[in-house]
Length: 363
Image (cartoon, rainbow, N blue to C red; front, side):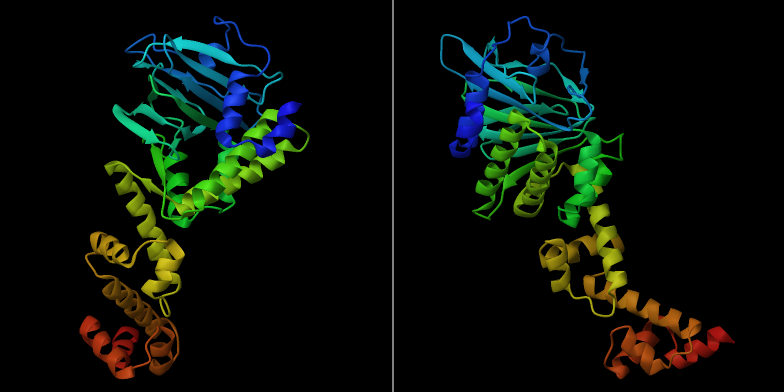
């Protein structure tokens, strides 16, 4: 196939244009596959559920839109891969039209290759710029605007079991793994989406585009072993966007995210209470120092230092009544080198020295 030989030198934008405009077998305007590629709005009140369009063995697919805004008629060129035979589909539209309101029964990741792309998600209009991504939950009601501006958009459809496997590989940072697993896959009553933007890392966008280009070419050619290559590329893509891209959340999503992150941070502190530092949390969770203080204060009413001290003292009190270790051993094991300071803060919290506390409780 010609595309397989040329694809190594094509940019993602060029590859999208090639497969949407110049492939063989153009579909007739009334072909039944057309509404799966782009379905103009036919009802203001109804919405539809788009089911996964391929056999279950094909766990990733790519839908590509290339919008030609030149007059006299705006045209959307589209195609889908993998497919038994390459094809292209054309739809003429009027600027400002929208697709039918819909959800998916799979996860969708949209990437703006060129231009701008506007969607109406949960009754809010959102404009995505070149290089932005949008990850949409399978419950999330949305529709796409068709505008008189040139644009290229790559949609990746990800089967639910594939998405779960990607998250289970732990390629993403903890802050996004726990959000995605909890919000996108488990809380079915909360419709979700995530908007990713290139961060301050100058090489992230180029690396992401390279992976997307390789993935699209693999899905197009669909050769033996392609399933494994596509999963590997998807793992890389999620690693890049979760560690090197910024993402924004709605007010409701931030509440969910904050509780998820707090529980993870709290669990980490409790497991490393004797040695944990805020710099260690920064390295582990990729947030700035002041975020930990604000988050812990909002959930416990305590500063970071006070929260760690509370955990250490509670652990010390537990060890005093459940072990035969000496007070000196316990003092050191909970992270204090200054015995006098430990005695002072322990007595302030429990109203007794460690030794007296042990006697009072055990007798």
